[in-house]
Image (cartoon, one colour):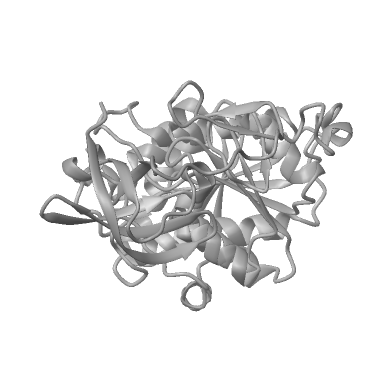
Length: 366
């Protein structure tokens, strides 16, 4: 449960959209902390703050932060009354937002009867770190593409936690964001993955959608106990709504854990067992024995999906030109090149689908 601490702000650090880094004195210690000003107000040096330090004490994936729960001596003003959608529901910091499809939303009329993605390509990835790599592949193939990011609630709930998204927005690499489920803070809010996808296409005019969880993957070392199982569930939503699911494989030649080398068991489980709708599973055409092993490991996915081999020539340079630092599990582009090239290959394939009519009859991608 929560480990509470009280401290005093001694320094303000970096700030980006919706987030503020701090240094907080807690007894004889100084700790890095993170505040979300929209929730708790804007901290200043000298403020007394209440902190949640549980994940920090345990060394878990919160970016090394204590999290500011309140600035009790200087509460923020009440926000304007907008929306009835509650995110992080029934937690002490539940947030009320305006849902894109609720009756008071200006988007309601557009979404009220929306039921089809009209073949829009949707790239699904396990980890948040794949997002900029997917975008690098999209823009290498089709520089003018309008891309919208749909963030699920498998990792961080506040979109503001992602410095990557903030930088991608500033660079023009994202045309918009939608937060779904319990996640919040996007340009538009949605209740489910389904309404989030429809919002991305019908409201934000996405030509390509990228869907991943927020920062902070949760895994237990078991077959089913990982937050990325949502990737398979997302493929089902995309297929149900007539989109084109493009499955980005989690691939690594550098991960020290055998279950994540080659094609991660996360991808094999999510796409091979959870996803019941068909997807284009993108297999990057990597060189050497490792590339052969990846292609062999993808063979069982052909029973349910279209396995598509995509070349990686030119993708390394495209990845190096990304406007954000690429990092996954502490490994940069050169330390885990295969991981990033796999995600970029999925983006390259999705970009090639933008102007291609969906196969089969009607709106379903079959």
